[in-house]
Image (tube, rainbow, N blue to C red):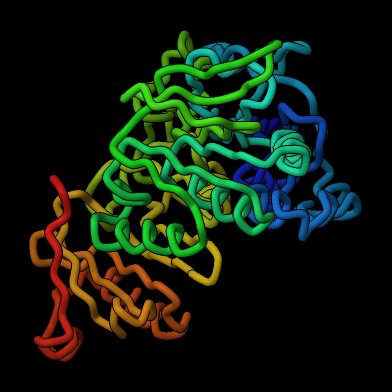
Length: 405
């Protein structure tokens, strides 16, 4: 009997879990705990519309106060989870404890930091406050160094160039997004940024930050080159926010380890960026740091907490907008996959690529691909299909690239 359900994490996954609980008839006590003193808001626009100044903060809010009120939930905003006693069914907060019958963990991730990044002008983005602080710094600066070439780093670089700033992008990979999507897409991302005036320094890391008066003035790279900077953005990845669970007895690996139904322990579920679950569609344990997954997994965890007992067999969806390039992807993109163009042409920068693993399509990526066409190709992933002759282009149009292993 669930008399009291607590959701720790008040972002997309936590909100989705709360709404699903009420929609499915749960009428017991519901508490939503959030580290920030803000109602749930959308995070993907932080590195795009918020950073560029196109949107104001209020546009990010996922639900208005009336909708939040209809959840009939106790809001514990501005409180941080610091411990969990599974046996006693108690969540420990810095503002006191909470007992529960059911718990959904949706605490997300925390950005990785670099040594010496505590000087003024060195920024990261996780929260709205972070994005607003970075936006102010960009408005005051001219030379920007972005460290990290994943989604966040490349999006920040694009937004900074849209503000007509001098931008240098630094990364350990051979090209941006190579680790995510392979050499073919990485080279095209690199060319796109270069075309828009970004200086790319690949295959290199950061040795130290140079500062004067506790304010950053430059970056010394691992090859000892020094790049002048008014603003440095560190976007080198994130780690699941699980340190508070160290003594809980839950299995912690790359996130909170769960079964196919997102269950970490009896009556305890995880959702969103923090959850590592077994996805039966791909027959592997996985963790996904993207917005749609957070929403879908939050709802799935809530349903299973109420007894649905259904596996969460999702097809992950990713997207990124950079300059005039719209990247959308469905599925998974392992380093051992082969890629084959199945729509359009890379040279035209309008194409879709299928990622094939052991003869099976596991992912599709579109670059300015019509959304309808990409959704049709998504079915190849859902069906665990092989790449047929009538799916791929004629031989002269096919580009096959072995991703770096």
